[in-house]
Image (cartoon, rainbow, N blue to C red):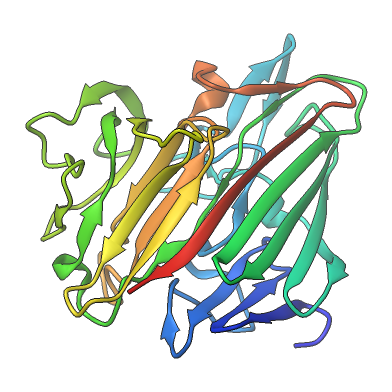
Length: 300
């Protein structure tokens, strides 16, 4: 679909990025999918690959206060009474740059009754021999300070085996417990002795996860990695930097089929409902910019 998406290629990697939510619509290594993709038309299912900004995950009731003023965003998850995954998914995007292996998509979030800042956003997707590199940059071009958080939302695919048979390597020592009905934060829990302890890689099995993890082990360069491996020998890795102290992991559980198609791995600059808690919330001053990057690569 010329004009609404960009096709990228480099070596064995290929990708499609779309103006719908600034999303990564497809990522392949040779003949295998590395993410759960979606078609060229219609709404993006399950927020696959979108850029969630200026908050990731859930904002309870869609209302919050900032700088002494009250704001209200549309509740787009009515069954849980939440404004889910920010505002950029509802805004028009445009192609700022396009090349054989690189695309830059842009979006503006204006100040209004749902947000105090005026953000100019860009997401850069680049393919290389090392995989897909993503980078989100936000600039507050408005006159007032603005609360800010971001995450990409890919569903990783380890291989052709069922998700239950995949092995997960998730080097996180703590997670945010949530309410069973609205999935809103309750408090921190350690993973020791818990079903969510994947610091030693092991089979996912039937466990259901839709939680934010933190206290993540990193290498000397501050990089963290989550890996999922198929028993047939393939896998995929998502790597991110110190800008993202959190990662949301979701086993893609649905009340009806198709179910558990992939594992959502979403580096986050702040946890769910951060506009209420203030935890790790970025406060973008007028003229200030924030950038954060990640990489998805094939294993095996």
